[in-house]
Length: 258
Length: 303
Image (cartoon, rainbow over all chains, first blue to last red; front, side, top):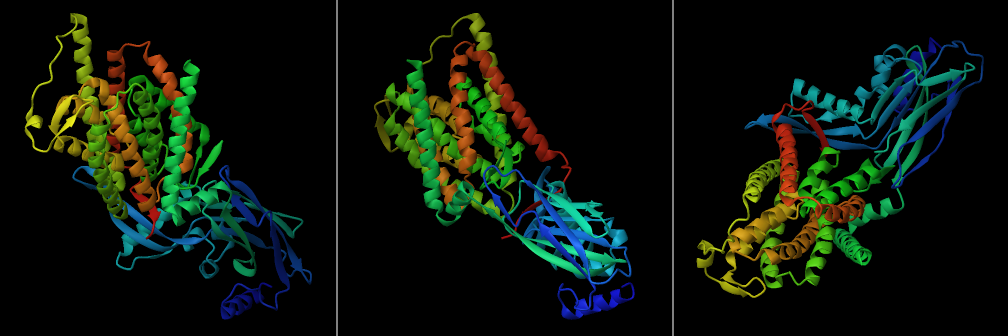
């Protein structure tokens, strides 16, 4: 397997996809604890479990393996603003659009990515957090570009939206593994993707892909879509609710005072 | 209990919001102010996007001003005619304000605008209130002052005069329309009712009798904040109905307790307290504008 690894990688590159090469004697299979997440009014985040196994047709040549599990939220362009002091106050001065940045990205692995994953495999499969954010405005230059790029990662990490857990994947029995992710409460709706990588010597031997549908639901869904699709009705409804509440309060306390 | 706000797109503890609504409601009942100028900065401090805080607070004020205006309506202390004149200016101000808000939001400068407006107005109002109530406390120790008669000012020399029977006035409509315009502008930009500007302006500039001032101001505020809510909802999509509802529930309960509590405390001392609080909020906002922020970058959604 050790010698076959570059061949597998070549086959992968040739196919231009993440589908496992037919010649592989090992396959990774996995399942998610859930494939649907409903963002209701009381949604406060949840734990996502990923569990899987290594399927082997022959006894392993190289029993040593690593697993990386990456969960990625929908990618949207982001506008990054930088403050500068103008006339004594701090105001937004520069703005740069970053074309691609996942709204959520969590990567768990059996060890530090720098040790278990080669740089080329990282770039090809876009596994590490730093490979996720890209496409900075062309007119911004070297250092500034780097700074805006880093700012997205730093801010999203701080918001708990970009997570890295070296050692977050636990292997048992030499073939089974589990990973758990704490999904934060401030998830964006859309199609999330979970990728499970099987690695040998820093190279990707097999990939398993699954998806999770995250959507606003119930009252949440209804209010949000009303506010975008029929803003006039939404606005009138908000005023009506406020008027009704104001009137009810006034009447209630008038009765209580008697 | 965390609750996900659909428009603000953040999760906030529901009890924190109820508590905030209650606390600001208590203060507004205690001091007889709308509370918008305290609530909006507080919402921003707890992490609600400023654009959502402003628009949603306008929505909440619709409710609190209605319940106040109803009480005055029953006591017949609303000058409807004056209210409508103020309102005509107010609606124009709101339209201009929301447009300005929208433009600056696209330029990424709306936080700056909101903060600057707050620092300026809270500074002026807090400072004046502080000085005035200190003078009042000193005066009350010396005995009651001689009652003042309304003076004739430049306001009474302008054209387009109109008779306002409830206020016992015959003045030009230009000053009330201008006052209304300014208040509408502030309602749209700051998410406040604007009573803190309108009440003194009505007393000192227009010479209205104090008995009808508060009721008329509430009457006008209700319509202006209603218009601001509607415009923010259709232009900026920033009114969060769930956030407004939570603040409202806390607010109406707090206001009733505040009103009871207020009758047991001395007015001048209350005013000093309120002024102190206004100045603290103002200082915090000013500090945030001037101090070097720990994070220079911020993320927004790309157009």
